[in-house]
Image (cartoon, rainbow over all chains, first blue to last red; front, side, top):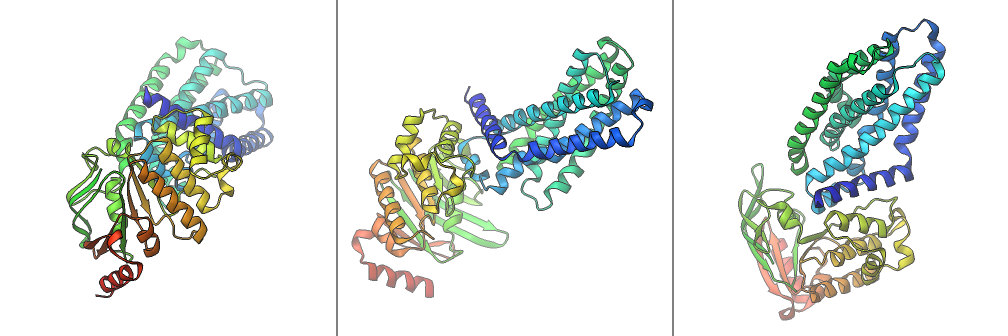
Amino acid sequence: MQLFKSALAIFRKDFQLELRSRYAINTVLTFVASATMVMFFSLNTSLLTADLYSGLLWIIILFAALSSLARSFVMETDQQTFDLLRLNTPGLPVYIGKLLFNFSFTYAVSLLTALLFAILTGSFDPDLFPFLLLLLLGSLGFSSVATLMASLVSRSVQKGAIFSVLCLPLLLPLIVLLSDATRTLLGGSPIGGIAEQLAALIGYCGVTITLSIMLFDYVWTD
Amino acid sequence: MLEARGLTKMYGTHKALEDLNLTVKPGEVYCLLGANGAGKTTTINLFLSFISPEGGVALVNGIEAAKQPDEARRLITYIPENLSLYPSLSGLENLQFFTGLAGKFMTDEQLLQCLTEAGLPADAAKRPVGGYSKGMRQKVGIAMAIARDTRALLLDEPTSGLDPSAGNEFAQLLSEMSARGAAILMATHDLFRAKETGTRIGIMKRGRLAEELRTEDISHSDLESVYLKHIRE
């Protein structure tokens, strides 16, 4: 019970800090809005295929997430609160709390990006329920990998560069799965048409979260 | 409450701590003196299990810190030279967060009471920590110890950089904590404060405890002479 209370306290604290500083919110909003606008004005959207749409959507979400998710742990190092956290709680609640925050944040970013896509292009119209499920699993996959990697790089010098280098190879299979499933949905397929991708996505999230929980204590105590 | 038995720590080939034996009982204030690199901070870090010893054990209420870090840390409050808190949260919110993490859930009134006991007025407690002085941040640290009903307080040069009045106020807070039964281990360079606040003083030199003194048995000038003798040898 204490584990969940502590994880919730971490989540609430990160949410409170983000609302007050608005650092990640501003960075991501600017990035998503400008990337989507650039895409809209530089490409002839009437000629865009489902293939391109799905790829572009997930590329924007991926880089929006990468630009902000490292902050969850880097902030603790910058503010030198890492030791005080370590003294007051074991590693697992910290990982779960940060994962919850990163997931909520990424899911909100994904929803916003998809909404912008739909408004600007007018032809981005996948089946809503399976698409929301895809966004949810995609956000969970991004955040599970990014949370562990952020904790790894938080005490290094070149945090941002190392974070991207470590995350991208691990996120590549996820991007391929998500783009593939989105393309199928945009082609008018029902949820049954992406059953294999959904199963693979659930497996990906399960494996990355389990591995992160197993490995996080080493990062936390070392 | 705090006990080091044959504690040894190596950094590569450098022996930072060698066969350290010391005990701090509940209600005692034990001051560790010594030059930079004498092993004071290493001793504290071993009790906090931030690092592992090469030999010996650091015990917190009989719990071996290196083997059961979470259990040992539950009994400890640590105040470093510069206590880092979340600058955009208020003192009250910081206290609420850290006590909540440690499993103590208290109402705002109870937390404000702890902060007031630590010498932080209620209006200051509701302001963001970013605008706090070092002394005010240290008071939030003491409030954490009060809220957690801490059994052991570890301090690493807590009064360095504080003006004499803030230093005196902090020393009084330590006396109050020791009267509550907390075992206090403080690393410091401040001989005056060590003599005034401490029950016992340990002088460390090159990783070893060179001499142990009871503060009631020694004057300020004698303490200075003994300290300088060890440092210059």
